[in-house]
Amino acid sequence: MVFSLPASINADGLLPFLSLIGTPVGVGEIVLDFSALRRVSPAALVALVATANRWRTGGRQVHFRGLESCVITGYLQRMDVLSACGVELPEAFQRHKAQGRFVPVRKVDCGVDVMGHAMAACLAPGGDEYGNPLTAVYDLAWYVITETANNARQHSGGTGYAAAQVARSEGLVRLALADNGRGILRSFQEAGLPWSRGTNDIGAIRKAIQPFISSKGGPTNEGVGLTLVNELARLARAWLLIISGSGALRLKPDGTTSTESLPANGFFQGTLLTMVFRQDRVRDFAAMLQEAKNATGLLRRRERPGRFEA
Image (cartoon, rainbow, N blue to C red; front, side, top):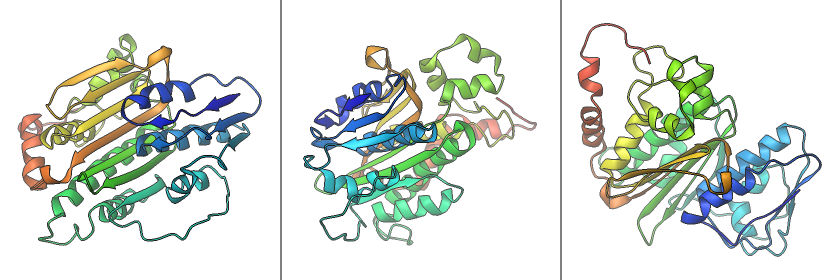
């Protein structure tokens, strides 16, 4: 089966791309044709790597075609997309430090906090030092990366991948994490949560951003990660997109939330979260986190005695 990648996989092109690579592949070899690709977001990159490695783990032969004519092959190499998929190709360029510019695709493993620090420090150089102007950007990036990565490790049953980019001329930070696991809905269903049998992927995503909803159903500090990521994105006036299965939830900078299904009856196996925020809108992360906890009722609920479970 041949998947011809479109010229641009940014913004409005992401959902159709996920529907494309989510097409049932049948049997035989899988070919990804890059010859037309010109622009691609970190979100599309991690989704592509997660999907290609799911195919490979399932024993399928995956071939990358058209790289010699693709105008961004060098960028794909710098972002470690090819090497993350087991594709070795000579590099016709010299690598320079990515600090302050981008974070190549990284596999989410047991060292989530270390990975979060490395990624946040790359996006906001010096931000881990007290009083640095980028401290709040570092803290927000670290929080979103580690919360989302831990969700992938603990709940997905698959493998997660992360990448990020800084558009310095626009002052934008783009974060993306994707896994190739069971998805949010199935995670809830396999945990035996009764309400999950009567909902769909969109309903499961909406439930996942509510406080104290966890597929682990255990300690009181669980089930708040995505809740706070969503609220922090709202406070930062960021763009947030969560995709799982056939459903997608968008948060816009004006604070409005909408949901939709992937086009053409598409289905993404796993979960993808991407967040884009302006650096100049993130000034005091500690205050933002406190406000997020207050807005979602987390502090009030934790003041009550007893044990709370999803």
